[in-house]
Length: 292
Ligand code: MN9
Image (tube, rainbow, N blue to C red; front, top):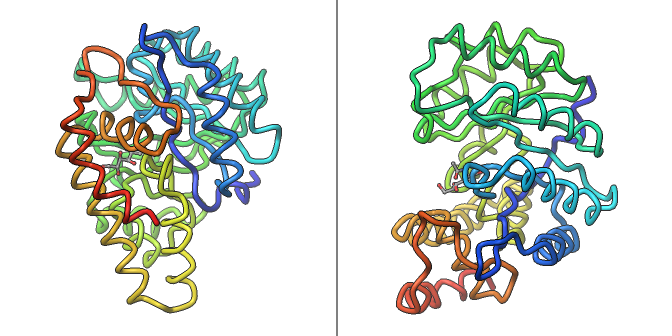
């Protein structure tokens, strides 16, 4: 399986909404155009940052189609297809394949505490349904399930299993996973750990902050690669000041707030998330200088 396209910086595309909570379809297109022009290496669509949990299956298809059309083959588009029902996930996998996604990825189903063997069967069924490369989305803080070298083997031996979006602060477990599976692509999933994972040899990052701070991450990467660690650390510190502030108001509302301040398509998060207040926006204004 050719994994070379999975390299560099992939914004986890936010989903812009209109005031009536409908998808802002022009906004999706504009955000994709902006990110591709800014040099995104690829896009991850309808993941956590895209509020996939709050979208219908049809809306997820629509967003993916718009993103792929707007990307015009310039960058690979990965579709997050994870959902609560295996049949929905398979429907989204087939749709992703039919409309030209480069790869698919899925969170495990949540809420019911499925057994490991149920989760393995979920992933195997989904991978068997299409021929696209598959990226396991590991986000233990949100799902309650931690995939690591102790439990991933039955999933990783599938020929379509291409890698993992590793969204955890546990770099020890990340390193052990990379050592055990050198042929899999292990992707940094937390923007605040980007520099640490570059040191581990990670080649690819998928993140929400990349919706509005792509150039900061490019600079961290460049500084790291040229051995200018002092500058790379400063860059990561600036990113982390932004992430701290986002976490304070809720990461997903924080993404929308930053995009709004930068006059990019965003709107609010979908309910039950609360709209962003003027006060919250004002509090974030001083962070804009960190993006310069
Ligand atoms: O897709 C995002 N993961 C989750 C990536 O939200 C679970 C990250 O970019 C985080 O939003 C970010 C803040 O913790 O690192």
